[in-house]
Amino acid sequence: MALIEDKYLSGQLLISSPKMDDECFAKSVIYLCSHGKEGAMGFIINKKLKDFSFSDLAVPMDRPSLTNMDSIFLYQGGPVEKIRGFVLHSAEYCKPGTYQVNKNIAVSSSLDVLQDIIYGVGPKDNLVALGYCAWQSNQLEREIINNDWFVTDVSNEFLFHTDDEDKWQKAMDETHVDLSRFIYESAHA
Image 1 (cartoon, rainbow, N blue to C red):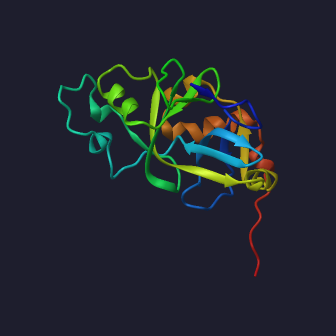
Image 2: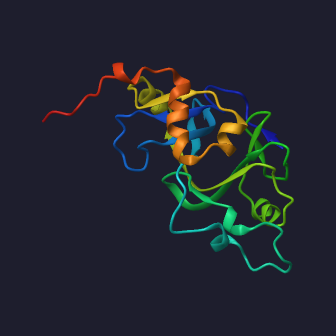
């Protein structure tokens, strides 16, 4: 298993600012898997896909599933490569191609992890995402300075066991930003 070095904001949450008006990112919570001088990459963790299900991904299996596939949700991971699948998961699961973000969280993108989830031998906690979010060198830093994003720590409990509709507010609460003092700027022509 390759360990992604602890750098910059890897393993942290990005919470979209209340002023974020981009439909893809409004009220989004993003788990940052990697962040360094080359850029950043992460997954939106609070927006389930409505038109596509996990069972749509499942390839016909030779043996019956041990997992109720209807209980596994797909998430809109981000606007980049929207049909590419990733599994953000607890780090006890390790296969070739698994990248450990930190001691608690890892990311896999092979079909093996999906099959292991279906057969009940996959990671204990997991979130299946289609697509990802990416930033070029210094782009995310500029957006944070511009108050487009707030940053906070994350726990496995929050990541995998908090209701999606509560994640943005709970993450925002963790930042301790007083939203009543937040200045909203509007563009002028």
